[in-house]
Image 1 (cartoon, helix red, strand yellow):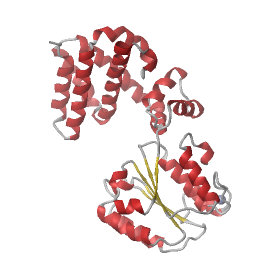
Image 2: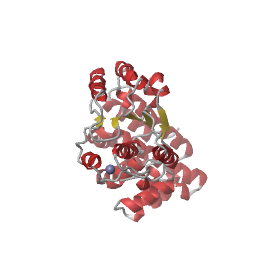
Image 3: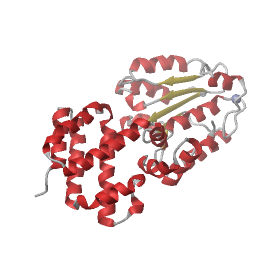
Image 4: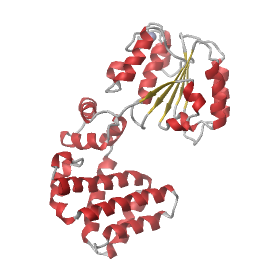
Length: 329
Ligand SMILES: [Zn+2]
């Protein structure tokens, strides 16, 4: 993979290319932006170029020894910090710093990639600061983060900051058509749903689970709108089984209500996100008053906030379901 394979993010890619071409690579970078937006992909291409002996501005040569080692995941001049845990501690940074003091073995640069850099504790960040203040010439540190504010000002001010922008609908659509095996009837829906994030589009297009979850969620919303209270408890089972995906389900709910609103209030079918569900939406538009939609959107948002505050899950979901079902006064 090289820079020519990247969809969008052209400003950032062009700046990096210029720096590579003119041998003016900085010593520390922060790539920030939504999860799935391409920070890590671009960081890895940038790293592969910095490590290559015959580098071009678009990509590494792929043939030299550092390139071969990098591809095999065994180039000692590339060091990656990533963790499944909640934090990156000061010990992790100290270990990395010991490595920083060793000159590169095969490559012109030594590259350190810190993924989810916001996970660094304050102590870890302060420790890293020492390296950022006096980095050996051969070091290149790339931090990726979806929470820029989670990094100390002192870290930010000593790094080159690139904020990744969301892709346009057309860019996401093109990416899906060019790279994913996708049913053309679903492209528009997934491209809108991904909200400008290619990683999300990719994930959604590959997930049968997501498709099923969406079908079921929409079915439930329609059922809640017309049935009586005794059904709530059977509906709850779905939320219990999909507890892990609750954020996704709440997104599906909000998008569905939004679509009903857009079609009903503004009569604009072209703005539908669930474009493949146009028939269902048109059929149901008159069953939801505008007031009811606004109320439901608020009820769904309330649940999201309650979950963040760790309230009792079952109780909170059942309250939401009851409210969604309430007759209007
Ligand atoms: Zn190479």
